[in-house]
Structure formats: C-alpha cells, structure tokens
Image 1 (cartoon, rainbow, N blue to C red):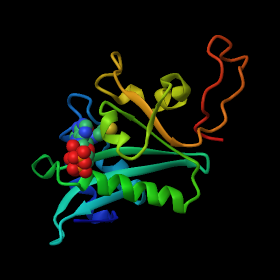
Image 2 (image 1 turned 90 degrees about the vertical axis):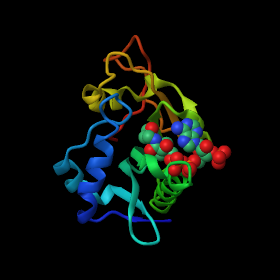
Image 3 (image 1 turned 180 degrees about the vertical axis):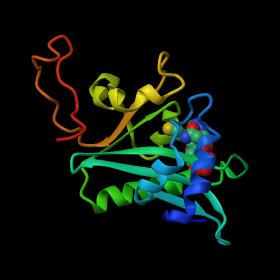
Length: 173
Ligand SMILES: CC(C)(COP(=O)(O)OP(=O)(O)OC[C@H]1O[C@@H](n2cnc3c(N)ncnc32)[C@H](O)[C@@H]1OP(=O)(O)O)[C@@H](O)C(=O)NCCC(=O)NCCS
C-alpha cells in the first residue's frame, strides 16, 4: 500500500466511499463538486496495483491550525494499516507546511491516540461547530471527541461577544 496526493480522477471514488459512511453521521457528507474543488486537500491510499483503498483530507486554516477530515478506508481492507498510512501522510504534510497544530473531531479517539493526538475541550473549537456541524446527521446529539496534536493556537481572549464562555480557537486568523 502507498499514499499519494489525490487527483481529479479520484474524486468519484472518494465521494462514494465517504458517502457510504454519512448516513449515521460517521462522516460529514462531501458533495462531488466540493471534493473536486478541494481535491488538493485529499490524500489517497492505494494498493500496489493502483486500486483505491481510502482517503483523508488535510484542511488548512492557516499556519496555526489544520484539521484532519474525511478519513476513511474501504471496510473490506480495514485493519491492515491503510488508515495509519493516511494519518502519517497528513501529519508529514502538516509538518512540511510548518503548521503548528492539527485537530480533528472523532468518535474513535483510541485510533488517533496511536499518533499522539490528545483529547482537548470541545468548546475551544466552537468556530468549527458553527461551520460544519449543521451538515451532520448527529448535529443535535453530538458525541464526538475533539483531539489535537501540537501547540494549540492562542485562544481568543474573553470577548465581549462571548462573555459567558471565555476564549476559543479562531479558525481563520
Ligand atoms: C478508522 C479507519 C480509517 C482506520 O483505518 P484502518 O486501516 O482500519 O486502520 P489501521 O489498520 O491503520 O489501524 C491502526 C491501529 O488503529 C486501530 N484501529 C483501527 N480502527 C479503529 C477504530 N475504529 N477504533 C479504534 N482503534 C482502531 C487498529 O486496531 C490498529 O491498532 P494496532 O496497531 O494496535 O493493531 C477505518 O476503520 C475507517 O474507515 N472507519 C470508518 C470511518 C471512520 O470512522 N473514520 C474516522 C472518522 S474521525
């Protein structure tokens, strides 16, 4: 198995695999056109023979923060290291780009603990919730864990806009 940056010709397979995990909220839906527009963010893992096995995306907000999104491996090939190859590839890309912190939202924190991600406070990422959670099948019953690796971006100071909650991570600086 090997990873490589996705190309436009991968968009259909990426969309179909992600879609097969959206109905119960395991993954957030990504439309075909959105995947095509953001194909540069995707990495795929494939067999020696070039067969598509899985994908993951690194969504870069800025030098302070990137997010692992849409990580998924074909169920018939799960458990053979493809998911690990994807995470390692995204972390290498983040490091090469000098990104300080990589975050993710997940229901399987034990998988990401293999890569030294640590659980952090959900509330710190309220910007992300405002941006993406409306599209989730479990938006009214969120059971995701927020994890981060690296130096958490500086929090916004207790702002007049959110005096009751204190600081949170700003996705866009
Ligand atoms: C999560 C997923 C990407 C893992 O891919 P994979 O190829 O099966 O993972 P690997 O074979 O590289 O597993 C690496 C390690 O993580 C563990 N692991 C795999 N899936 C796991 C899971 N769902 N929960 C906890 N640990 C898991 C493996 O047991 C292995 O541990 P070991 O090295 O101690 O044996 C894959 O199972 C998947 O596509 N799941 C459905 C989509 C999903 O839930 N994505 C995550 C959204 S945040």
